[in-house]
Image 1 (cartoon, rainbow, N blue to C red):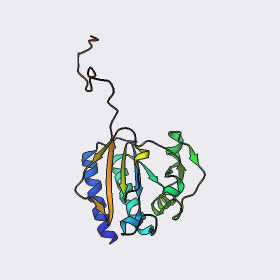
Image 2 (cartoon, rainbow, N blue to C red):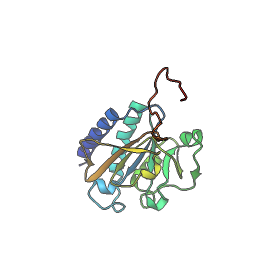
Image 3 (cartoon, helix red, strand yellow):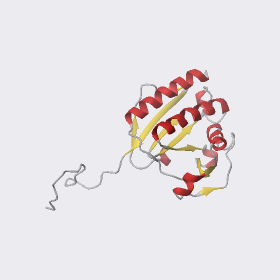
Image 4 (cartoon, helix red, strand yellow):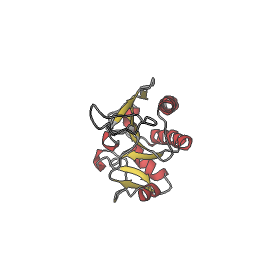
Length: 188
C-alpha cells in the first residue's frame, strides 16, 4: 500500500510542480492526515510509515525547487507548524514551546519534527502554496489570495488531496491596471 501511495503522491507533486512556478525560498505548507491516507478517520490511526514516505517525497520536491517546507500540526496544537530553526529565525517566526507527538500534533508533524536538522514549532505563518492531504484545513496558513491548483490524481491512498498557490491581491477599481505596460507613465 505504501508504494502505491508514494506513486500517487509523486503524480500529484509532478503536476503541482508543472503548474506552479516555485521560487527559491517560497514557503509550502503541508497538512496531512496519515490516518486518512490509510482509510481511517482523521486523528485516529496515524502511522509513521506513511509520514516517512510523504516526508521523503516532499524533501525531494524541496531539493528540486528550493522551496521551504512547513508541516502543520493537528488541531490539538492549534494547527501550529513545524519548520527548521534556521527558517524560523530568518523569518522571525514566533517559536512556541511544544514537541509534537502522534496524539497531539499528528504523525506527519511528529515525523517532520524528528527528521529535520533542528525542527521547531511556530504558531503562525503565511505560505506561498500548500498541499492538504486528508482535509486538514491548511487555509489559515496561506497568503491572500489562495488559488486552487487542479491535478488529475485527486487522492493519496484514501485521502483527498487539495492543492493551492497564492497570488497578490487585486486592489483598486475600474481604473486600476493589473499588468505592467512599458512606457505608459501617464497619471491622467
